[in-house]
Amino acid sequence: MSKSTTIERQRYFPLHEVKAGMVLARPLQITEGRMLVSNMPAGHVLTETDLAQLRARHAQYACVLETDWRSDLVRSRQNALQASRLEQIFRHADMNDPTTRMFHAAILGYRTI
Amino acid sequence: MPLELTVSRIAANLDRLPAFPPLIAELIGLLDDDEVNMVTLARKVERDPVLTGRILYAANGLLRLDYRADARDVYTAASYIGFARIRDIVFAASIANYINKFKHNPSFWKHCLTAGIAAQELARNTNVHPSHALIAGLLHDIGWLWMFYFHPFESQQVRLRLEVHNEPVLDVEHSMFGVNHCIIGQQIAQYWKLPQEIVAAIAHHHIPSETAANDALTAITHLAENIVNALDIPCRDDNQVQYVSATACRTLGIDRVEDFFPILGSIEARCKYLTILFH
Image 1 (tube, rainbow over the protein chains, first blue to last red):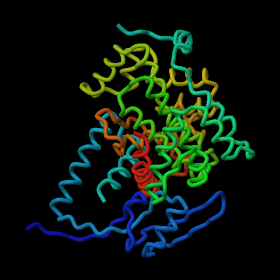
Image 2: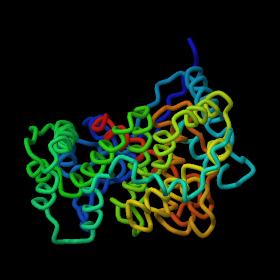
Image 3: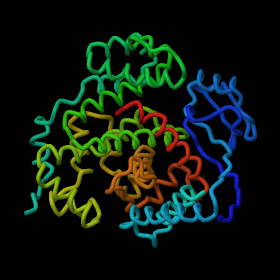
Image 4: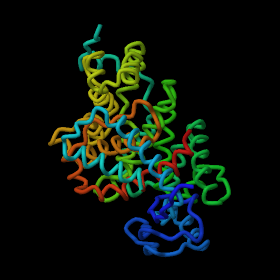
């Protein structure tokens, strides 16, 4: 059996995949025009009522905390696959250019959390 | 043998392209008019039954995600999901209808749609009108459709060289056509009399000069395409990131790796949320 280090990670989900009991990783603010109509802080545990309110306000996504249950082996294999795909996508990029390098680092960091 | 196209040769056959939906130009003209309301929008849209069907399909998809009953007309749909969102659906559905006329690979439309969504998300904290960002994203590769429509053989050759030989897209287009899809797109957008900022965004979205990238909509469109390609949405063999403009990032207030995380997350989540509505 492979070793498993459980970690919490921030994930963005479309609203129809967000469930009651999930914990917001980032504040969720909804504005209508210039008016703030809903403001939930990071750490807030979402309830069915919250979700109904978010649907009524036409929210489209939320950033929640998710426990990553993958084993270290699976995680490192999946991360290697992501890195390899990115290498393909960036095959013509000038990686000496600092902004392109920063962008690549951002995508790699996002894809391998 | 390269075609060696010139701007005047491109301009000469723009009127042979399928007619651009007049509704889009009409609605763009009304974006800043506060007097335009749901009734005006619904009346304009309902003149076209095919478009109405497409809009209702997308709007009802959204309503079902929110556990609400289907709407049977555009006015009711607009009153449920809001004027701004129904207007975005009208833009996306009209452009989807237009692109479908070219019978091109479906992944092309998906790429345009995700770039549009990404552009709108990037416009959130700028002065750019969200609908301008959406339209620039949806139409940024319109020059490629021109190439496919008038020169299908050469376009297939470009695709082949991208997929098999992994060459940079603008280089391949230059060698086959003498111009690239950005220049052609600029000609088309001018011919359609789209707002100047959208024309500039289409013209410079690949490799914007320092001056061009200072314009917020050009910066948004440039970054939007790079983001959806880098995130591989939709997954396509020819997704490429060649160059990311430092000026474009600066224009949008992106200075550090960490600044990208919420942008990437929200774009990916919104793409998942919205792409199911426009097949």
